[in-house]
Image 1 (spheres, rainbow, N blue to C red):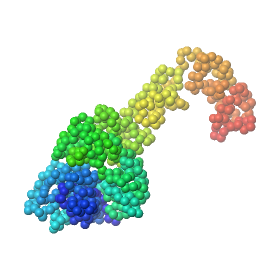
Image 2 (cartoon, rainbow, N blue to C red):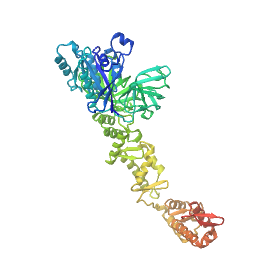
Image 3 (cartoon, rainbow, N blue to C red):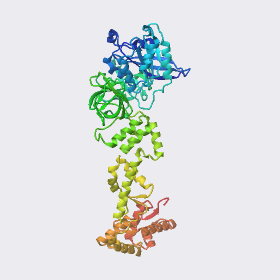
Length: 637
């Protein structure tokens, strides 16, 4: 089986420089599909073709290029941007007789803004110029200080076929050395065509990125939230069961109505990958070769994927974005859009005449509150300095938010779940984060939460030394305002009890803490202890033992601290006496067999008033079991 590597190639260049004709010469496919395009002789909308080339690095493999042919006319630049939103390499077309033109420059800047770093330059119409060397040198000069300054320049002519083979070889060579489109388990298909086929229903096409889509799979349309199922799918005109990143893909979505429930610019994705954005914090960059500056609070068009959305652009500090400069800003969308953190986009003016800047999404789900907050600025600066570093994105988010569910951490990002888990594990090993079940927490935030909990327990020990510890309900009230998630409270208790603290019943205390009777109860406590010790198995009734408020308060303390056991509402025993009585009952039954309450009462030297509640308690605890009028030991007790 031959190895196939899939990539998306987009054409770029000035109108009438021969992009579509070159694509047809290379592939045999005419990308101009609209009647108006045929009549006017220019590309208005996107066209598509496929080119398969032998791989120069794998004798048994080949390169599959899904070609997106974009319009070059200045009136259709927005359509051009829709075609290059998800490309791996560019075919920059420059006519040898015209040379470098305004749309050539604008297209080059758009490619750079979108992070396209690999290109081949086709110098078309070479048959119309006398000096080929001069034409090549002129283009090379224009490419200086751009991502494509080392790109191969291939002179071509579709009239005589000159350079077409060399162009194919160059395209295959550049593509073979490029990394394959990544499958991060987060598929997105920006829709660039929507149409209806009789008997089939709605069909959408786009360039699949980020993950695999499968026939029969349930998908969601963003930003509308419409749910649909993929009935059938094609990739490069072949029926397939699944489509992978880097392929032109067509989906049959019969549940949706074309033009009403889905349109160009929408994104087909999975519901688990989050919802649309209303506000995004971004890093903006202007080319030093741009023609206009971008001003603060400007109303602009944001081109992303296959669509565009209106937005207000607000800078964090600058009043304008100077040519060749970078700045942090916020996009406030007039209609929501589906972005990932790490996505790139293009900014064009409101009139749609000029490309102003490019940008990178630093936070796809930002808010407008605390816009000029120093912590927020620090967060964005960290990400802007290392836009490809997953570690920085994780630590900056946890530093800002305190914690995150692992399943939701950077879910709307260009990093895979496995990559995120590996980095979290490394950070946990370094002591930068703490992991509790499905939660990952910034270690400094966790230290603050733990300190608040420790202070609350110590304050209870100091001010109410008679108490066994702090009730967990009271501890929750003390720390809940610091918890990023209420479910983390159990983790706080677990962490405390891992060292220095112990939980018992509904309360928690330090291991070294032993409750003491307050001074005004100490005399009553001493009397209670003496009375319970005098007749250990037959003490007075609770009413006689604690007849007044002071002695009742002291008795409650002894019960709470475990020094006295409440057998029932009327009978209490010293804890040590209750333990001895239980062991004696076990011994008697073990040696003589099942015994009556009367037998056991006599053996203990007690009374029926005490023995009956004591035996009922042992029954409840599963130590003894009653059979008619006798008690027997439960197996294993």
